[in-house]
Image (cartoon, rainbow, N blue to C red; front, side, top):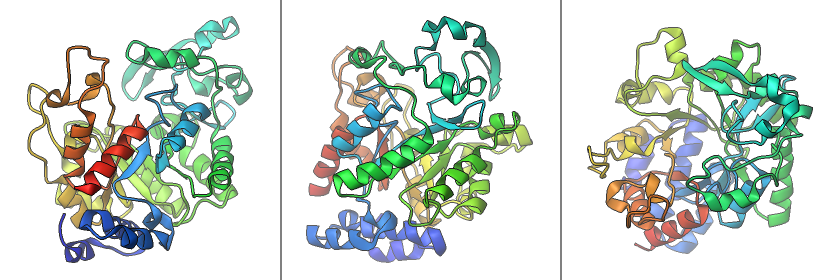
Amino acid sequence: MGTQESYEQVRGTGRRALLGAAVLGAGGAVLGLPGAARADAQHGGGLKSLPVPTIVGHRGASGYRPEHTFGSYNLALDLGADIVEAGDLVPTKDGHLVCRHEPEIGGTTDVADHPEFADRKKTKVLDGVSTTGWFTEDFTLAELKTLRAIERIPAIRQHNTIYNGRWEIPTFEEVLRWQDEQTRKRGKQVWIYPETKHPTYFRKQGLDMEQLLSTALRKHGKDRKNSPVIIQSFEPSSIQKLNKLVDNPLVVLLSGANTRPWDFVEAGDPRTVADLITPKGLKEIASYAQGLGPTLDLVIPKDANGNLTAPSTLVADAHAAGLILHPYTMRDENNFLPTNFKKGTDPNAYGDVFGAFKTYFATGIDGVFTDNADTGVLAREDFLRG
């Protein structure tokens, strides 16, 4: 990152220009403009209203509450998240979108405690992986509403288990209404960052994720380029379909460099993520999307011992293509931190997360997903103070 002129060079047209403006007006922060100038730059609406680096509450405040619940979403806002990832979208048998990390819900709900659903337990092949459990597409919405959310990783976040059973599974329709209610209540625009989960898998079952999502957004008047809704997916073809259905900012999610998006596997496309993050690949993505959501390891690779090495060229290359970057996921526990930021021997204890945030922010990323929004907000304050 660097001069204002360099940002001007990467600004595209249409929605890409909108995100380019976000990077530029971000910039007040990145370019070292005074606070008042930063504030003035944020009154333009759309993505320009978001501070940079943007703090995205990953599945809400999932470091403190069971993920994808209104308890988690509300707490993320209370802790200062600029955007709430509400939510990972999966469909029900009767065509409703609900918020769960995966269609398999045995690990995130109390479905196993419901004898009436014992016969729904199945083994399916999900994106090439044999998976056993209960799947949202085998339940009606009314049936899912009888379940309650539980902590997904109780061995690491035992303190979150005290909230098991408190909240039900939100629908996307409820999230869209919640967004409006919270915007009024808090006196500031609330942003959400939904994701289409396994769209190729569901398409084979006659469930069109892109159509369901776009219909819901249009119904609520949130399908426009300045709407406070950013849409993401690990399948580039899903984003390409959405690019024709809505005008929202769109983001392609990227896993490890040697992996292949599942829609590529199904289509026989041999390219890997490593091919997508070349200048040629990024230029192609920029033709239908406005941002990238890479794993943090694509921004700064780790060595064999798990220590951070030198940053890659991804941030500069993506910015040169007119794309912004919101990598994932920062978490406070040693379990999830690079080795050189772990503290002590307890894997579930908190490490030097502020040091890790600072290192990632210094690469020029435009935002980051985090399970601990409060930590992210404080780390951003530290970073912007220099």
